[in-house]
Structure formats: C-alpha cells, structure tokens
Image 1 (cartoon, rainbow over the protein chains, first blue to last red):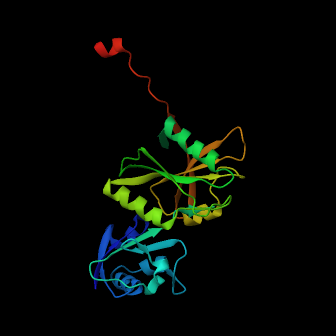
Image 2 (tube, helix red, strand yellow):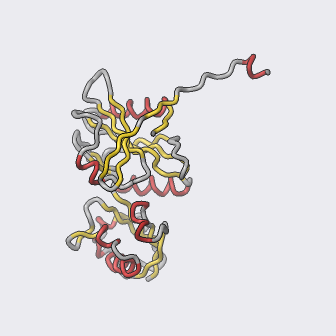
Image 3 (cartoon, each protein chain N blue to C red):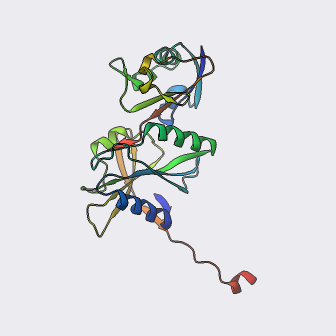
Length: 90
Length: 147
C-alpha cells in the first residue's frame, strides 16, 4: 500500500528537508518502519517501548490513530498519514 | 526579537484572563518565512488544567492543514501560567517542537498586572528575547490624504 506521509518541521532534518515522503505498509507501524529504512533515526522520535510516543499525534486521513488501534491502525492505498507533535506544556 | 502588534498582545492577554485559573493557549499564524504574526487563533486547552495545556488532537490537525493551505506557519505559540512566572516550565521545554516559533508566556498570577515574555526553545535550550510591541498607527487625516 503506497501512502503519502506528511512530516512536521522538527523531523525534516531526517528527511533532507522534505515536507512529505512516500511510503508503503499495511499498518502505521509498517509505514514508520519503511520510512526508517530510508531516513534513519526517525522511528526513535515517534515510537517508544513499542507504542506511539505520548506527545506525537499520527493521523490516517482525518483520524487520530490513537482511537483506531495505535501503531496497528490500518492504512490503505492512497491514504495520507500526518505526523504532528502535540502542542502542549505545563 | 518578537515584533507584534498591540492588538494581538491585547487578544492574547484577554484570552489568558478569560480562562484563568486554567491555562489558555493558542497560535498567531503568519506567512511562512515572514516572522510576522498576523492571524490570531485561540485554541481550546483540551487538558482544562491550571498546570498543563494541550491542543485537542482533532483541532491540531485542522489548524495545521489550514495553515498549510494558506502557506502559513505558527509564528507565535502562546500559553498562560496562572500561578507562576511567565517562564517556560520543564514540560514546556521538553515538549517544544517548533524551533522557528516564538514561544510567548503570559502570567496571570497577579489579577492587576500581567507578564508578557517571549522565548525561543530549540533542542531543550531556552533563550529569552526582547518583545517590541507595535502600536496602532493613527489614521492619516483627510488633509494629509489630499496631498
């Protein structure tokens, strides 16, 4: 499954400045692993202890994957995956 | 240095006062690369807390899509501290993810006077910066316009 992944500013150092990259996979985790194979280091910024980092939001199209199976959320051909760090603090 | 119009400063402070004692948060977007804050976008604090703020995840996606369509970026990201000074907390520093943004902190701990300060937060390093408030220019008089 080919999807387009939107990369936030803070992670573009891993993608040579690209705002979006193409990737393949059946789930969000497979998509992340596919990006990692070409842009080393990005996975550690997104995944911690086999879970999505608490303050990283990932969306498949309009849906926050936290409510759709997390890293196991399914992706389909042509989907847009958007990565956005939370805007949060204390 | 952050340069920002008086009207936008007033809106941020009014939002912080309105949500006190919970923290208020939002963005001022501007054209990408301009460093010019223009469009005031107050956000809901999904945490509804006096010690924490977080944009709702659905609102966050809408906000970034909209800015992307308009070729904007978050020039200012603001939030309030309601019981402490207007200085980034450890959590603020850890979670700051927009190295190009001015992080504005407003303290509403004093009911009569507010603190309004701005910072860069990059890779865990906080740098305070001066704030220059641009006062509204007075309308030219009719006599001046005729010249």
